[in-house]
Structures are given as C-alpha cells and as structure tokens.
Amino acid sequence: MKLLIMGAPGAGKGTQATALADRYGVPAISTGDIFRFNIKNQTPLGVKVKEIIDAGEYVPDDVTEEIVADRLAQPDCEPGFLLDGFPRTMHQVHFLDRYLSERGERLDAVVSLHVEPEALVQRLLDRAIKEGRADDNADTIRRRMEVYAGQTAPLLFHYESKGLLVDVEGTGTVDEVRQRMFGELDAHVSQQ
Image (cartoon, rainbow, N blue to C red; front, side, top):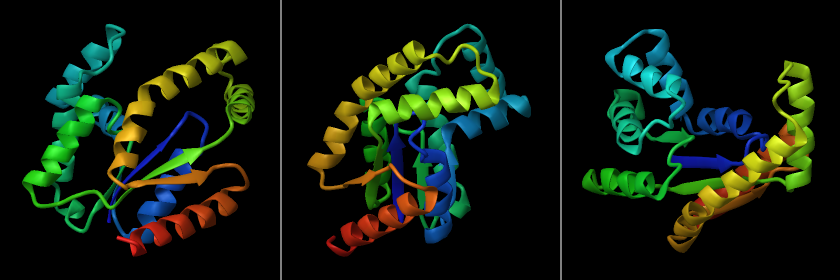
C-alpha cells in the first residue's frame, strides 16, 4: 500500500498514521521526523535544514523532495509506505507523481481526516494548556487553520480528481475514527 495521510493540526493525523502503517505493514514516514533525525545527528542534510529553520524560513521544496526520495528508496519501503506531512505544496505533489510514475508505481489512496474547525480549535487549546504552549491561543490556532485550509485545498482537489481521496470524519474517540478510517479505506481500495 502506498498511502498519504492529511489533516489539519489537531485532527489526529499522527495517531492515525501509526495505526494505518501498522495495519498495512508499511513504514510511516513523517517529514518532520526525518528533519529532526538529520538535525539531531548533524548529517550534512541536517546541518543544511537547521540553518534554514534557524533563519526562520521554510525548508524549500527541492530539499524536502530530496529527503523524501532518499527515504522512499530505502528497502523497507518496497512493500509500500505511508507519507505524513508530504506533500504540502503542488510542486511536491507533482514531484511525488513523477517519482512514482518513473518507477511504474502509483498511490493507492490519500486519507484526509476532517474535523470541524471549532472542534480543532478546542482540541489545540486543550493541548496547549497541557503542554504549556503559551503562544497557542485561539487567534493563532484559527490562523493556522486558515493557512492549512488554503494550502491544502489544491492538493485535496488534485487527489480527488484522480479518484484517490478518502475523506474520513475525524470526530470521535481514537478507536471510532480508526475503525471508520479502516472501513472507508478498505471500501475505496476494493473499488480500484
């Protein structure tokens, strides 16, 4: 299985990504985790990424794409993968499409977790209190939601037009969302 998982901050993407990867026996690949690993281990790539982040910049598409291509070339990705946090831009979408096409492969599905914006704001406010994130207030959280929605709308439209999008209602307990996600993904894959 070659999967992507998408969802706004607080939608439960990280939690559900682990469950999906375990279910299909594929590695869960988080670009954020890859960046942190490379920075921590001071690899040449990590040094480069740290400089970019320390300067307050976003990691450019070409650097992120290089990291993802390198990770997807690892032997544990032969049976498939679950990407979390990539792609984030249309440039990255087209890169991934090309990368897979050149290998005679394609995505099986793109899981998109949806939670009502106000429920997400409350989840993130609760998390901010628990984790002591003073900078996370309702206004900054709502702004992050707006940015996320604006940036991902074209990606979701692209994957929907290719018949790959699996929309999953992300409200409920972790187990309820997981069972809903598995059911909808199984139904989607059986129709291909």
